[in-house]
Length: 151
Image (cartoon, rainbow, N blue to C red):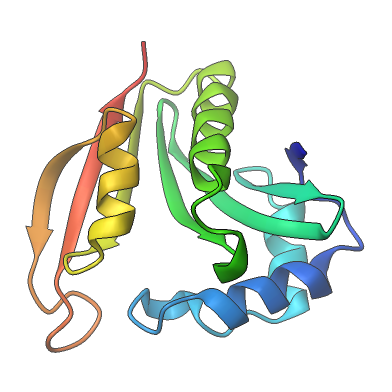
């Protein structure tokens, strides 16, 4: 098992993982082309971390630095057949270490208000609810914003 930054040349695998497992309720993230992934890999304020094992890439997280000490976890995806094995927790823990090394003080993320599994994962790692957005991406989709101050 290994967690590392994504490399150029992995755009196809990453876009396939996003487009296969991304919930339609996560806004504009559903249709990612390899070109869009490449742009994010090359952009100095965005970072993909990937989890891989002997079977290949099993999970990804997209981190964005949005201010000098504020970061956003845009999404965290684990292949369905790999869920329940601690991959999401490992990706989140490594993400928080990575962001702390970048000098980040506060981390935010958003989850669908009905996605109790994702919300529980973040809260297990110390995140708290910061806001609630009704009809955020479209009518009927309510989002919770969670935050964590890094120590």
